[in-house]
Length: 303
Image 1 (cartoon, rainbow, N blue to C red):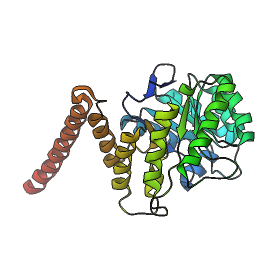
Image 2: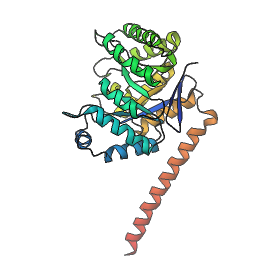
Image 3: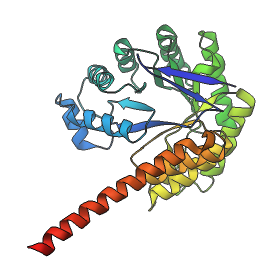
């Protein structure tokens, strides 16, 4: 079975068909977060620090680090600083995320361990620039299944793009174990078949190419109410089809619970150890909150 190993100086994370599902924390991304973008542009990384620590505490096994979407900024320098800072705070491995090759290079230069590069597409020019960089640093890479023609609505066309990236990566000495394919999740509100497309494609990627997969899970619910409920259902169904990781928000309790339940039902949580431990922690948290409320009530009644 394919095992993709990502590492920091002190920790390894394995993405694999018979491994627990890997949550890659999505929060360190200034795109759509104006305050974070402005802070990072001005050299203030305090929110990055808080987001890194909170996501790991919530159970993220990896973190995605992105410095895009900051206008008139030096993205390579900002991304490198963010990578350096986050590695000084947490032990989990990182996904270095940018569409700017120079930023990927800057992040990889300062990264300690084996990173996940996010990402390469099927465009010839992009593969020619990104894949040598991945090979040079001995990294793994996210392969996004679109090319010069854009994102096809036909999942079988997207499969062929992914296959081409995997084969091209092999030409650069990058084994399929180090290629994690993103099947591209479209919003279900705009495309009613988006869920079925992903499940079909993920199944083919597992059974025919034997590669691990990831996705931006929250894309599926974009524009709809109760997004956490949709995301949780999507993730468990995608896990059944073979999805092995996702870039998601570990602070969203519904989605995290759905992932843990999926691991349990797929046999990736031996003796329900992690499910029971998480449930106990939740119960303890509820009791602490209840005790605090009762304490405040008792004080109020005695005055």
